[in-house]
Amino acid sequence: MQRIGLISDTHGLLRPEALAFLQGCDHIVHGGDIGDAGILEALAAIAPVTAVRGNNDRAPWAEAVPETALVELGGLRLYAIHDLADLDIDPSAEGIRVVVSGHSHRPRTEERGGVLYINPGSAGPRRFSLPISAAELRIESGTVLPRIVELVKR
Image 1 (spheres, one colour):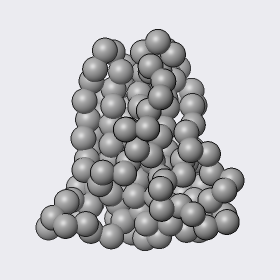
Image 2 (tube, one colour):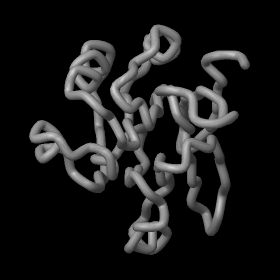
Image 3 (cartoon, helix red, strand yellow):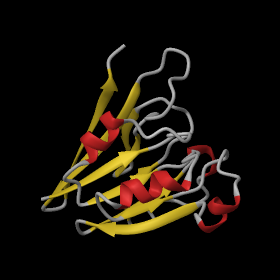
């Protein structure tokens, strides 16, 4: 079994609750609006990281972060993009099993056409009354089990 940690919209704040949740992951995917290169360094100390640039990642360090990323994990293809509205491919036709996004700060998981779409929500500063959350994918024998976790209780 592989455990893939999903985090997004940290906006420069990497909470200790997020670090604790991600411990033991085999890989981490950051869905953008990272906010600070140090966040990627801290995540990389836990596991290999795939990250995409968000609309607020405008500092010079962010130029090296791609807008989208395709990675194979646990025998399946995963595509990361910050804003799902910018998706310009057909994930199903591309053989992609999971699409990870961020941007909305709203945690959500939905399966459409054999593709799992997951937004781990925001792990950074609280926005309005939205939860502080992250997510994980447990991958075993081609089966993907998603789980969204509220990191900080309201």
